[in-house]
Length: 255
Ligand code: NAI
Image (cartoon, rainbow, N blue to C red):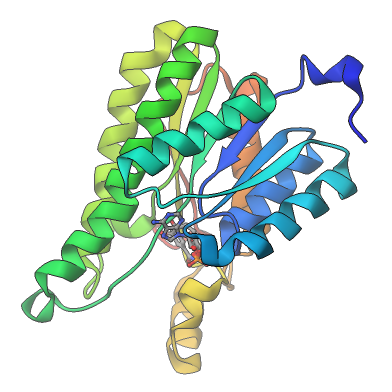
């Protein structure tokens, strides 16, 4: 049930690729913190599930929530996604650019389409959503753009040249947005997760997971909540003096 007295001042957020994994937990934690939340899935195929999820956020946390199918790699769909969130909530305070894919191969074997697909979703998709949202945020003189980069974008990884390039690109995009938008009270920051337990890392074999866990000083893969809590902090009004930063959340992996 929405309290109409607080609706006007309530902050709202859009989380791309939020039907599962990190994005889903980010949506939950933002709703829990009182944000109206726009859930996003990449196509109509996932819309029924995404709608059930957004309904559960509304019921569990007393916020407004909608689900919108949009492929962020397509500029028109990304723009419509931002517009739908603005229409539903009357404003848009936080965009979490979380949608991402991998197409892992060594460079020698990587096809051009594997490279393009990853850049299109991870980097161009982030650009598309930031561009549409920045316009709204600059006008309302408030905003938080939070991008999901990766430790792979900072340090590289054999077999992930396309992914690393896309995530390094996200950092450059974020730093530039931070400089362009600071005077409008809009911050732009990135989070660089290490290895987090999701469908994306489920592709690794048990032996690979064990070997990786040994390299992580904290001794385990991260939980989706480890990332979602960092997002909620950067999304908060209190984080307004933090911009153009990359917050590594990796259990010490990159130390
Ligand atoms: P995931 O594969 O579980 O979820 C990714 C989500 O993005 C899915 O819901 C998918 O449908 C959505 N998506 C993919 N393409 C899309 C498109 N074109 N338009 C809209 N949505 C789209 O992945 P996970 O692990 O939850 O990752 C979330 C983000 O965090 C990604 O950007 C990923 O690169 C990043 N990340 C994940 C790490 C991990 O260890 N899981 C480590 C570092 C970064």
